[in-house]
Length: 178
Image 1: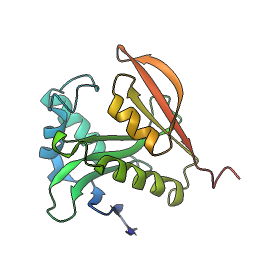
Image 2: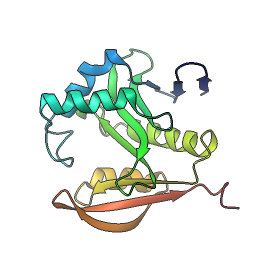
Image 3: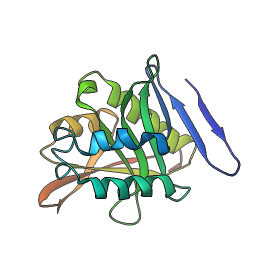
Image 4: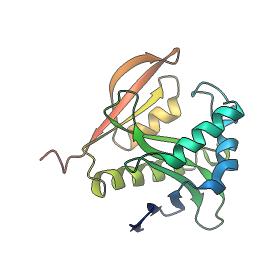
């Protein structure tokens, strides 16, 4: 499974796992983002479905984010079917890099989220030389907590944000801490 990075005027990321391709988000993905952001199941622990105007604003920010942010669509390799989104961007603390993800419910429970999150963590540590990653999830979101723990993340702190108890998970890049 390779990482392809091309430089030039724009940035291009493509990561591959055994079953998925992760590619920079593009204008063509607007409908997919809307599908995720308006899904009640997907948004259950994320404050509920988002209104269309807010979806458009969020999508525009993903397209124009700074070069240190990574916003990727996740697609099944064999069919090119949209699975979800994954990103590396600034956490609420304004300091840490956060790994975030959302996947359509059809793909839950198949190990794809773990596969994709592990790949992006590897990319962040080995290609981007990030020293530490965080992830924030509602304490009540047991599936997300289990996923983060399965890739080696540990709860660093508990905060009350968005009206709910949140776990802040952390993982250090051991290669950079030597």
